[in-house]
Length: 286
Image (cartoon, rainbow, N blue to C red; front, top):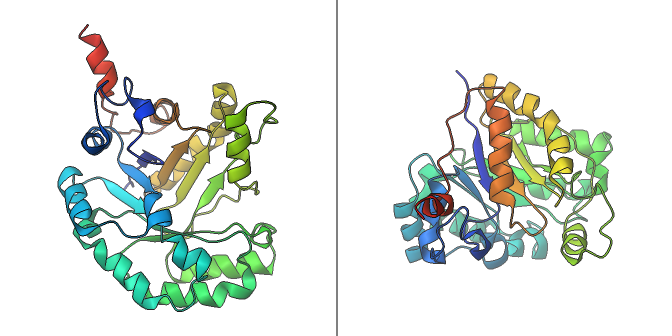
């Protein structure tokens, strides 16, 4: 049986998307239903910085998101970066319990590790994965350079993820770093914030996660996306359900780029069509 593509962006509340993805007067509290009417997942970065949302907020999201939608939250940085996964059992349990109203709509929860979290700390990651509820999908993003050299460190990491049926997040920053930033402040900031690591394409579980960080130049974006078309189609044909998040340096054009990528992939493999953007529907009425 073929898998499903989950396509989304880094957030759903963005005023820059008024007039395209959203209507001209859509506010932050109204944006999730419109967003989920087009895209099927979202990268939940807010939990990385702020921890678990309030109970009433979670319940509101639960009412607004359709059954097919997937929230892909990040484990809070307090646990991954400040405590480096040490002694976090109670806090991790609390975080996952807080998300309980969304458990049927959770995509891979991402454990994004610090840039200096290396092979010597893999036992801490192993302890977390042993405790992770089997019913909840999980994905791990590493950034230490030793996990990208195809040596013992990377082999140990991949074996650990395969053993626990956890996916490895693939961060594709090739488009972002395709040109020097020059005087473009937005590109400078994006290149400072995102790590420049080799892209190792592999799926260690059933929901491979791809974070595509684009450029302002769409010709560069489409050139770097071309190899992903065959890879994503192959995973779907194998019964896997890949998760693709599309970013641009300031994310203003991310919805349009994600839609363009969806159109190209749909030429290779059958995909459900994306709904029209609310802002574009609104403009067509005038």
